[in-house]
Image 1 (cartoon, rainbow, N blue to C red):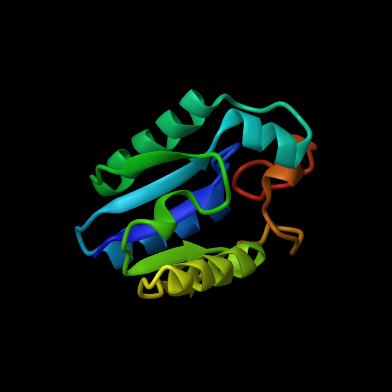
Image 2 (tube, rainbow, N blue to C red; image 1 turned 135 degrees about the vertical axis):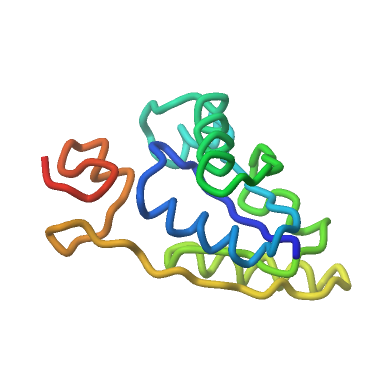
Length: 150
């Protein structure tokens, strides 16, 4: 199976790891394609500095190999769709806030005469306080990457 996922992954936290676990499971040893937002796109969407693209991709590559023994293909995202409009995938793994992006991908694929990608939505992971683990909360110093309060 060929599976896609996309994100900024800054920092790589337990919520991301839940998504990546689902990607690995769905791939069944097939190709995993991870779109990682470019530095320009990450700055524009978050309005703040973060880890550079090279560090974020290395963190993902290292995690996927260490955790699952999986080699992954990482593509730089300069838009919300990456290679999903041109390449065929069996699955795209998304979090609740990116569901509309996945729907748009399938709409654009249909316009191009391509088969839709099966959308697999993975629910957010909660921190110990019951709120969502997010990069924003981690960078604000509220929680760590595991959802523990700081």
